[in-house]
Image (cartoon, rainbow over all chains, first blue to last red):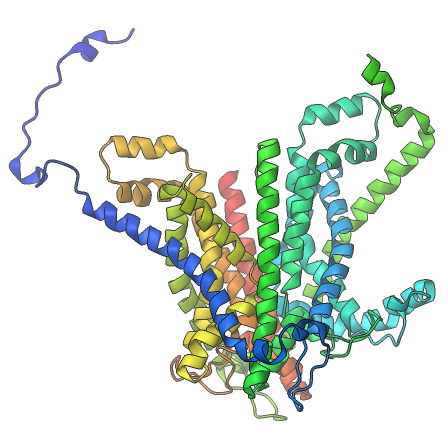
Length: 331
Length: 292
């Protein structure tokens, strides 16, 4: 029985001592205003920071922009002695190593996510998932150390000769197998982005409505058929979002690439040849660039990288917004 | 009915049962192999770092300065100190800025235009390569002051922490149900008290995890320090000059021809890897403990 009597009883009036009464009648407003203003200032600060990146890098690369114009993007001639600078080899190396990374990492991440969501028993899936995520926690420079001293020699002795024997008729797999070069850089980048792509793809796989998959299983489909015909088509936009994320990660990765790419401004058709990327060029040459045009050219390379990553983020943002609109889901 | 008839036949019955089963098995095996491959590389890297680095970690490694080029012995005490100092400084600047930005996004800016612009900016800043943070600080601080400094190194690390913490804060505060906020406000608590005393308390373990992970991550960064803090073979005498740090030391020493320096580089690699991994594993373990 509820004690109705209490509920209807009038509350006893407790007189409030004057000392604890608030000074003003309404709530005090200024602490809230300060709090809100502080939060807003910080939010505005990060926007200013982003704008600052563009303004400062553009400003400081003006000497190079004035000297070389658009030719900077199409010339691979990089000679500090004659003060001729063109960024093509760095841009090419950035794009090539990123492309190799994605070609390797996307299928592997898809397969790993498939294993984690559909195949592995729950306990095992947890351990494997945490192991894959730990790969993302290893600092970039450690990938570089391991890449230079252990993995590049391994590539030179085993992987690259094998590729040359089987696919050597392709120009991209010709030339001496030194281990150091764009190809090895791409493979290490792949390792570094697999955790990020896998995490997104795993989330996408778990978001498929079970009814759809169960219907396919009920028709006698095998696990692979369910994944190929139901899970992947259902989540294809989200999967593409994962690829964007990996792309953004790989394109500006610095230390691991700097250790193994070879740091060479020559363009070469072979992926086994040493090359450079924008980030590796900056890491290697910036501290020795005393000439103003040399420094400005390096900053212009940084500006190009900034624009590239910005465009990737804008594309990912628009893509995810579309995804949210069409399916009502967010990643 | 007609539309069903027009569609191509269901693919499954057309192929033989054994072939479909076979494909399924192949894909299962490949998928398992892919997952294991990632683990193989994880353990390969860790094994290499431990095997090569463990020999360098002795008492002098933690207590003395590096030896001159080609010399024997020596340690990286100055670099350890420098890395700790710059990471702390980055955290002191970046964490409050990030938390307040996250607070704005989650408590004030929800559904507003500026709020969604801030979210977009945070995502862009998260995607900016760390070397560009170094380049930016070089342009605005090193060029302006005329010298490399530990302050510049800390600032470029702070730029990396800032968006990371903002994102985590927004995500974690977003998980707190609005009914909690409304209850607090209905009791007459002002906005700031509601956020700090109620919302933060509800989200504190997630917030702490995110902040710790971001600081751990940044402590292993090299690229932003290359041309801001630079490096130095001496004891830091303040943050006003080039400041020794572990990661740039690894980079310089690994490329050097001296075997003793390379040995120190592996020792530093082991130290930094283990610190980052221990923090990462510890915070994750704590999260899973709390979830259980």
